[in-house]
Length: 569
Ligand code: ADA
Image 1: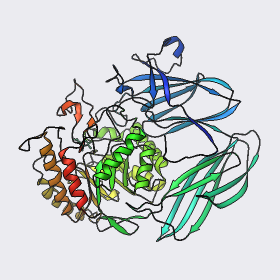
Image 2 (image 1 turned 90 degrees about the vertical axis):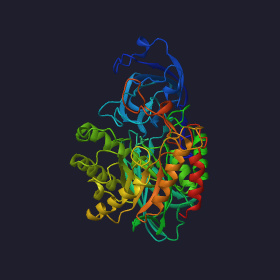
Image 3 (image 1 turned 180 degrees about the horizontal axis):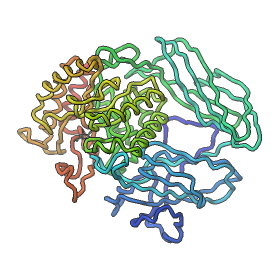
C-alpha cells in the first residue's frame, strides 16, 4: 500500500510487488543488460519491496544487484511505471531498452512507455547501493544504509489524455482560503483530442470545462477558488479535504489540510496558536525489514508515538513513506522532513563538489514535490550536522534554502546544527535545530544550560535571536534490559537520567520551542569491522532508542511518557 486512501478510481493501477528474480553482481559488469547470458539462473527470488541485507548471507552486501520481473499487458497500452523508492543508483530496462537512470533512495521516479504492445514483458532494474565520497549519504554515516527496491513498484495504464500533475496550493486568511489548483494534462495521442475536465472537493463538483489538447502536448491549467469557513488542520485535531480531478478516462486524487504556519517569539504557531513540540527522531527502519517498512508496522509506530505523548516526529534522516505521512496527517502530528545529508563526518571539500550539490538540490526538490500536500509537514530541513562553521557550507545552504522557498513558501526551512556556538548559517533559516549530547558525548547533562546561554547571546548578536530553537537531538544509549541499582553508562537507568534531565532543562528555557529525543527506536548501525568509526555501538546498533528495535519500551520510554503527557502543548 502506497497511501492510506485511493489515488485513482478510474485509472488502472497494479503493484508489481511480490517475487522478483535477484542476483548480486560482485564484479560489477557495468550497465550491460545481458541478464540471460551472465546470469542464466537467478541467485534467489526476493520479495519486493525489501532490503536485500535482511536476507540470509546478504547481511553486509554493498554493491550492484539486478532485479527482474515478468509482466503481461493486454492490447497496446500506454504504461506508466513508478518506482516509489530504490536505494542508491537505479537503471531501469524494459524489454532490453534502457528507460533511464535515477540517483537517490527515498523519492519516486517514473517512466512513461507509450503504446506498449500486448504480451509478456521483462522489467530489469540494476541497483547499486555503494556509498562513496559524493553519494548522499556519503560513505561515513551512522545508520545501516541497506540496498534494494524498498518501496512499491507501480504499473499504471494511462489513456491518450492523462492527468500528469494535480497541485493544490492556498493562502489562508483566518478560515478563508484562496486556493490555486494546477493541473497538467498530457497527451500521448498522435492527434489533437478533447475531454471534459471536472474538479471535485469531496463529492461536490466545484469546476468543470471542456479541453482540447494538441497531439503529444502537455496542457497546463489553473483553477482559482475562494472558499470561506474552511475547517482547519490543527495538531491533535486534523481536518482533511480530498480533491479529485477527472477527465473522460482518467482521474487523480490528492488530499490536503488547511493550516497556516508562522513563528513568533521563539514559538511555532499553527493557525495563530503556539505549539510546544514534544517529539522523537524516527528512522523508518526495522531489523527484519530495513527501510522497506511495512504499513502494518507504521501503524504500530504511530500508536507507540501517540502513547508516548508526542505531537511531532522528526523524520531522521531521509524522506519517509507517503503512507507514514498520511497517518500523521490523519492524526494531527507535526512532521520534520529532511534529506539524507548526514554531515558529522563530512569533509568540507565535499560540500563544494558540483555533483554532491546537484544531488542535494535534486533530492530536496524531489522530496518537496513528493510530500507537498501533507499538512503534517511543517519543516523542510536541508541537512544534518554538516560543518556549519564554513563559508562553503553557507553557500550550499543558501542555494538549498532558496530552492525550497521557491518551491514552497508555506512551510518553515531549517537544518540541524552540531556547532551551535560557531555556526554561520543561522540567519539563513526560519527555525534553528540543535543536536547536542551533554551527558553522553560531552560532559554532564547540566552542560546544556551553559551552552544554551552562550547560544542565545550569539543568536542575539547575529540578529537571529527571535527564531524558534528546537532541540533536535539529545540522548544517550541504553541497552534494552540492562537495568541496575545505579545509572551506569549503557544502562537503561543512565539513558533515562540523561533524557529526563535534559527535557527539564529545555522546558525551563523560554527560547526553546520543542524537543526531539534521539531517538524513537534502536537502529542497526553501519559498523564496519575494519573501520575505526562507531566502535562504541554495542551489538552494531545505535542503542539510543526509547524502545528497542522490536519496539519494546525501555525505562526512558516510561519516564518520557510521564513527562510529555504532563506538559501542555
Ligand atoms: C548525531 C546524528 C545521529 C546519530 C547521533 C548519535 O547527532 O545526527 O544520526 O548519529 O548523532 O547517536 O551519535
